[in-house]
Length: 213
Image (cartoon, rainbow, N blue to C red):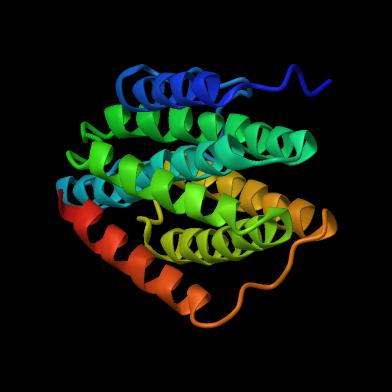
């Protein structure tokens, strides 16, 4: 069931509600947090700081994912397309909850610029949605492939003893790959140049800043 079609006014209200909940509320995961297959080793201060910085970047990525999917859903003409975006956003909420909890465990914090990240990602999501369903799905494929690669890099960079963070990142990586595959099978169209390169540049800027702030 896709639910009733929302009016433009209803979509504005829904967008504001989603933004407030993503930025101020403690997200509730619908799936259990991934459990590490081994206990891991105690982290030193430097390792804890590094793990916290990397998980902050991942948390920002999930804030942006919420905004991107909700932005695309807000302008989707096809209700099936809107339902796809909202379903993916629900799984990204699990990621947001897992990353937030792990940040607290590491005595770290989310990015201070999360409102800015959310607003920018939402605008990008709306822009992608306006391009039409097939290109919007193509945007999902490209985004998720880039995120999958980024999470793979973090698996290499996280302290070897941080089994808890590594389990979370590995599960997120699998989900992002599945989101890309689902969008591809739904009829995604390959994004034209230079959009993928611009997306990679914006991602590098976000990761560099969020690592520190």
